[in-house]
Amino acid sequence: SKRSLVGDGSHPGFVRAALAQVPEALRTSDPEEWGYVIYAQTGAMVQRRIVDIMPGDVISFWDAKLKGHKGLHAYSQTAGMGESGALVGIVHEFEAKKSKVRVWQANQHVGQQSVEIVSYRLDDLKSGTVKVFRVLENAT
View (cartoon, rainbow, N blue to C red):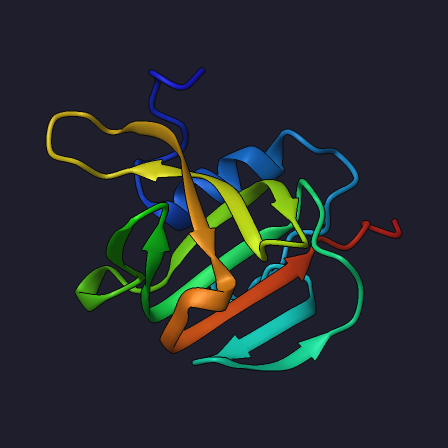
């Protein structure tokens, strides 16, 4: 539910709790790796794009600054900044034409810890790193 706390309230805690509900999902011991990297971008430059981003993929932002336009208005957005580390979430949907990803993530506003959907336009990434992971299947 969008209004309830999932996991421990942190971004990685939310993703771990969600993946725990998928019996076939392979759990990794590295807290920064969530599977196989299918997309990687630093600043405006895409380093890796193997397949299309899909719902259920895990996305992470490190020191990301996005700046662009939504309609007639300019916007700026930051993700995964500061001491809390990377912002990690689960892809809800991806619009390839607009390079826009909608992400389920932990809402960390004081007193409102829950789950929210946030949109990010990957073309608007000015600095920082974005990686998208395809969760691997547990072979056992």
